[in-house]
Image (cartoon, rainbow, N blue to C red):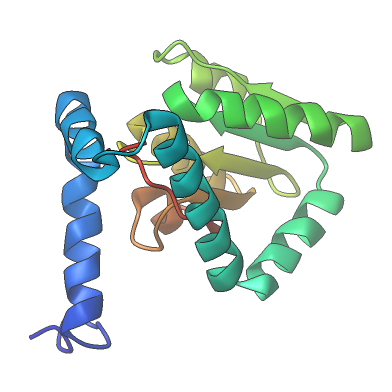
Length: 183
């Protein structure tokens, strides 16, 4: 059954299901899961160990060709748009700040959750790059913005936690970063 669905085997299918179930958890359920994971360790220690593990897993799994494609697209872009909503907003700001030190064509797209996001990317077109950052629970507006930009000819780079996420689906180039959303 797992192979028919396109998985290497049952373990990869199981991992996919677990990841998707995790992305559907409410914030309260995530907090309960985090409390179970920490056990007797301090919250601080647990969070740092989880982050170290996520960075190591990301480095081990990163698709270097996709990363180089993203660098090339960003380097040659007419305009660079970066968006991240809710918890990803800080990551978008961080990326935008440092990219703006290198390029003068960087636009950080901020959103209050309404249609203001789309007003800011109204003129996105061929030759532009949009970087969308989203992790579970994925922002529908981020996904819609990436789909709009893609339809208008922009190169779409998605930074997310899974190749099966809606952000990856909406992207030309997917950069996968491990994320333990419970921490």
